[in-house]
Image (cartoon, rainbow, N blue to C red):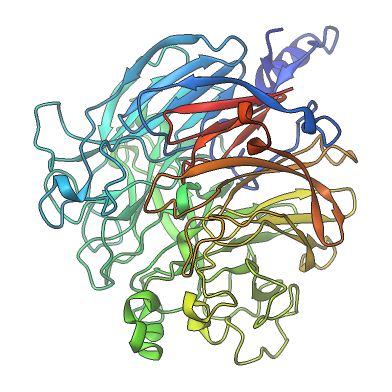
Length: 599
């Protein structure tokens, strides 16, 4: 049966006065993290439930030409896959047939250190031999427009070290250009230099997924985020956030594709926005993100490394500076200073300065006012989205706590009010306490996959899966807006039984349910079964748990892809989050395929 997208179905219902409701419609997964909240919650899943997920099986494999480093997208009956050769594929989810021929947008380059002069490699582990689409694209379903970024050589004959950043504006049905691609370039509006292209080093990196803003007046913007290849808090090189008014990209009268460019560290260096592939959370014209290592505002005001940041987008005006929009800092919270941590722990200087707050993405609970995220310290932060706090956690809804290995000590309990006097040995005070040599098992506890969230009729539940640990679940109270306590955990340790310091990057999660209907919620995770997936290609597995049922402190497991040889996943893809849509699960891999599971 052909599925209509929710957008199309709702339009038909309105036009027909609800006289002829379609028999089925599809939820669209058009962006990283399901939607702009980045909660990772598909609340419209009417097929897969805890009762039938134990019968899940591999349906088919969608074969592509290279590794997949981003999340697949699903709109209607179409599956979109993007690879490291800068190639896009569109498949029919029901037949497995290609809807249109694949399109290679641009020539990839070889990023391996062994293939480049010193300082020009981008993969010290030599896992990749092609570098292409590394930021999950976004689809504007209303206009049928696919926005894709590539980091590529200008042409197939160009030097391997000649690399440019392009934004493509593409018809989502045919993959043909709607408008010519745009070179993402220019100096930052707040100073400090511009985006690196060509032979300029350090190179930029695009890891964070693309975002799509729609403001109160219906003006749209495409958001592109950059990290940096190599991080020096004093420079050169910076993280950037770039906003293109969609009217400029479409060359409407009075508008040109001239972006707003915000430099994370205009008076320093680094501050990459990568978030392990998640995209900025967006509400109206407000854009929320987490930044990585670099110059922080406590060390030098006006810099925003190691921060949660709220940017405000202002659309451009026709015939005014080419319709160029604006990006400005509306609020922030400075978690810590790399410089201070290095001074406290000079015996491990490198690790102390590499505890990216922005190793994980953030998500919003807009109707309740929360912004939640975590980083390499394994610490979970529950902020007030309307008052991030700048240099104090007093406005936060609860005291930060180490969520990856709770309830193990040394740690504070989940959900303590911010008025609590923390123990000086807790990692939220003794910041270097969570360097791997001092954790309970001597292993790293980073959060890479963005935490996910669902709601029941009476409470919320939050899930995360840190490195070298098991999936963890926490309760969320609607009244206090606090994460109130540890709920339960899964069975599998990400990276298996590796010796300390263990492996990366933990698990990547998504959750599905039919709204708040009881007995419909499932939390899904993909993780490296054994080994360090940051430095090696290792096997991955898909696991599913009843999202609400806990037995003796353990989530009830429903499915594991390794339980049946016919269901095995393949090689783990460290930046590709599973997608659950319309009774099917889609998982990207480093085995040059997306695997589809269903009943």
